[in-house]
Amino acid sequence: PGLKWLDTEDLKLITDFSPISVLNKLIGLSVDGGMYSSQLMDSLDPIGSITALRFLSLINTKVSTRDLVPLKKLANLETIHLPNWWSFRQKASLKFRNAKLRFR
Image: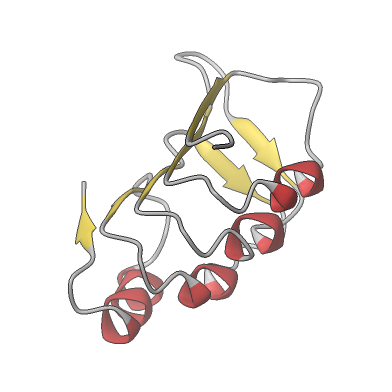
């Protein structure tokens, strides 16, 4: 069967999320910051390799590369929660690749 859903919140000491890239059966993933501090991530590349994802939450998460491009590989993604600091252009680029994608 394998893990289908993973929620993380406020993992202050972790910025390298490359180990999650092997969780290829995940359909839901939350990598969220806390109420008073942001979650820092080195890159979205590990998430971009989880092609079964249908739901992704990156609430209060800041990515060092400041790049959503790895998420363009997620053709099955239906819903994404992104903080407001991502530009309209970056979000539109994701929507262009995946017309069914809903932003929350």
